[in-house]
Structure formats: structure tokens, C-alpha cells
Image (cartoon, rainbow, N blue to C red; front, side, top):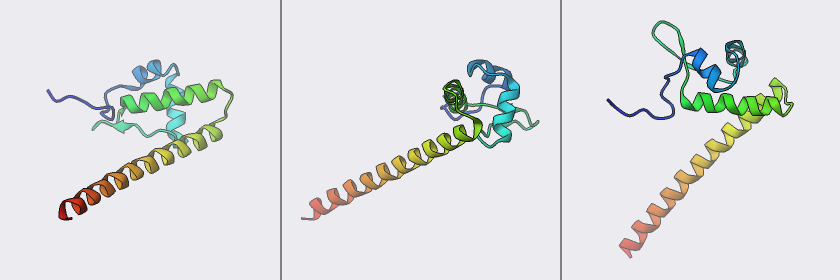
Length: 107
């Protein structure tokens, strides 16, 4: 059996809700508001990954701090953008290091 990573959808809505300390209706609302997009099985059942559960836990923390759904959405969007920029920067740095290595080999 292949090992799963944090993006593999494995949890049903009831389990994901329990792991995130929320109710299933809250998960459906977050999906409706675009804050979460769980995978779907062939039969249409929602399936949540470890990454989805971590995002739900982040939403719960923000909610507990008094943030409304719009604010939570903005925070998550900024965090997602930041993560993307960090990934791009890491790729650029790796490419730059490779170019420097090649240049030093040719010198």
C-alpha cells in the first residue's frame, strides 16, 4: 500500500468535523463560503485530507479569537498567498544556486 501524504482525502465529514471541533453544518458553510474545498468521492461524498483538517482547525482558532467569516476568509487568503510566494522564492533560490554551481564548474 502506498503511503498517503497530507493532501490525500480520507476523512468523511463527521470525522473531519470532530477532528476540527466543529459541527458538520459549519464545514458545509465554510465550503459554501469558499474557505474550504474538500475532495469528492465518485458518489459525491465529501472527503477531507489532513491539510483540510488543519485549515479547519485554523478557522476554529480564528473564530474563537472573535473573527467573523469575512475576516477569516481574508486571513486564509493572505496565508495561502504568502505560502505560494514562499514556494516561488524557494524555487527561484534553488534555480539560482544551480546556475551558480554550473557557472563555477565552467570557470
